[in-house]
Length: 251
Length: 208
Image 1 (cartoon, rainbow over the protein chains, first blue to last red):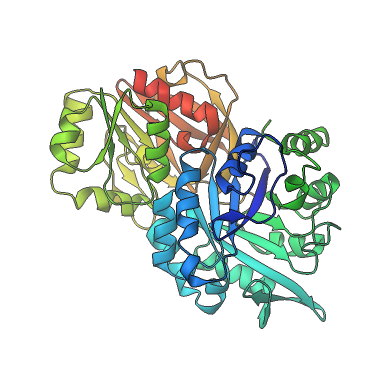
Image 2 (cartoon, rainbow over the protein chains, first blue to last red; image 1 turned 180 degrees about the horizontal axis):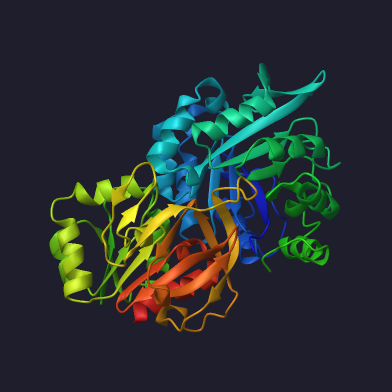
């Protein structure tokens, strides 16, 4: 039976982890490679890096991070943030990323999704959608949630599936950072609209939220950052909890 | 010993390279090349494959003499070869992804889209699934039955001779997840992404 996945996400800026786990035995708490290794050793089903490097001159730092991580972690590695072109995707894959997530570029130029999924295969193309409720529907936001568009999230999700996206990583902007749980309605709506796997993101504050995302939001995978980083729960805690609630999990 | 990972410019093979180098730890030489002489003189060959069946077959064919060299290696000389994902699928006579495409024809059968029961199951089949080992296979030495492996695919290999299937996995149907025919091994899942158990499978292959 296919298992639901737990994916810890690390924000990386200029090659360093922004919010990380504070374990005493870490040699260098700011090193994304060490953090990723802790997660993969702890049973993470995948690792996700979100590159939030703002300046262009430091963009290349992520390639080095990905290259070093892929030599230490033998679970799938997804990298996103600032991915604009086929060339960016190619470079990340060559450095050892297994999947690349595309956000703003997918909105501005859906052709990137279509061309890259043809060139590299759908399996490595994740489209990241930042969604926020505006009036009665969800709209797509770009540029890390700063820019509002007129695009309807559910229609965009379907369009991305048709373009060849292998998975959707959906973040609720309303919930992100609140720790009050995923936007279950949003996840459920998207999951029933598309036939590709859904990764839920944004708002996790406790283990029940992970359960809700899978059980009620119909997410195939759950992504979380802070609950793991601050040592509140380990990956194994999350897995044991979900397993005890009858969710298929790899332990 | 030399193990060659065939680099035929199709898809991303960094993870395969990294995992083999991790297991080899410098004791076994890992080459990454499409050089026909190197492949020919190698002790073992790994055939990775990402993207579509057609794109992989096209990429193999675009390198002059590569298919013949692989045929000689695996079929004539019967040296150990491991196909991963589409690398396994290409063992088939024929594949139906994008368009009907001829495969290597090493193991009779076809590669078709997974029957997802009219959308009841999502495709690609992405994530960790348990393997049911149905036949003693050398690459499963010290691997427990029902171990989890990482999968990502929408097409499946359907060999004619079911006796060649070494493990299956349960999704929308019972999916073939590995085959073994004498010296030819193939996994639909990605051992290079399947954590420690995956690395053990790679080690088993290297130690054959």
